Length: 216
Image (cartoon, rainbow, N blue to C red; front, side, top):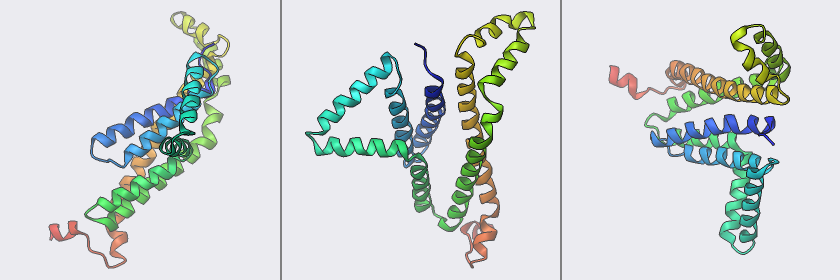
């Protein structure tokens, strides 16, 4: 049995986010390690429910881990942490931003910048979750596939997409990649807006940024 569309919907975006967060860890944002861990846990949990050999192996491994945890408090707490992390990726992202602010030399402006970045990300993700399925879905993939079938060089691709279940999988992959791109773009836009207006906002509270002192 091939990989299911629901599994792809979890694993594609979580896998990309996991890699991106590991890259951020390498670039000095150590707090992002917990977010990468959470994304990995989310993938493992989804795979364990997958009806196939890999899913069975993963489920068996988790089962063995849980049996071991019954005899070890450390393993028990680790198992609970993994389960909690897989369900709470966004709180961990927020926590990593709090740590980033705490390590900043200019905390007031960092607060505004990080708040803008998170607000942009959550707004963008919320919009995509509400609207993306209306555009990216198996029905529309099949419509595109049928149109492609009218073109000589795209007939083989069209036939592959129209095979049972393939449109759902392609739709899930496109949705996952689009969600990641939209999330990253939303975060970046929010961050840039936060950076642009941070000094104006903090100055309203009588704070003078070290950047301004340096310019003077």
